[in-house]
Length: 81
Length: 88
Figure 1: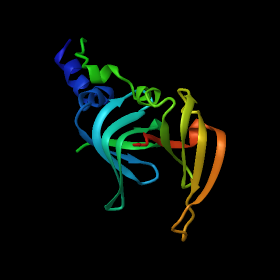
Figure 2 (figure 1 turned 135 degrees about the horizontal axis):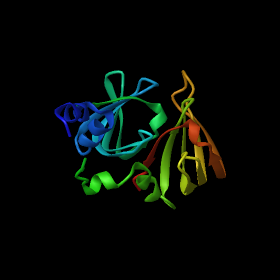
Figure 3 (figure 1 turned 60 degrees about the vertical axis):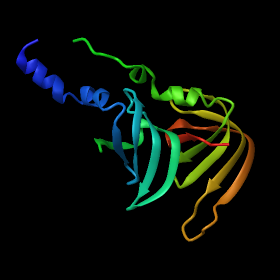
């Protein structure tokens, strides 16, 4: 693998997603609600499972979930927090 | 390119749902609705069948949601936002 290929694999979106499994993330949905928690798993549809998920509406935590499955079509972005 | 896969990576998100079969789940839906019920079945679209279901409809201005009870209900996957186990 050439250096250019290694470089591109670093910024590849799916590489990024598999790299952040297990870390703390923030997921924003199209409806504006954010969820933060530990990223347990993710698939090709961007279906996501968070543990210790906190639902943030505006600036307040409105709810907490032990485990939560988020359907991929609602996802706007996933950021490493 | 070889990738090191941990146990966590091999597990996929729908597995969480599989573990909830026959358990009570909370399903958050589009249109400020929620559904609680016992998960009888689901598929990859998140189409779901819930028994002993209660639908909660939140309307603006009202603090308390409208509750509708249903013995058995099919929920179409495209309106699902999230699914979470209900701690009993």
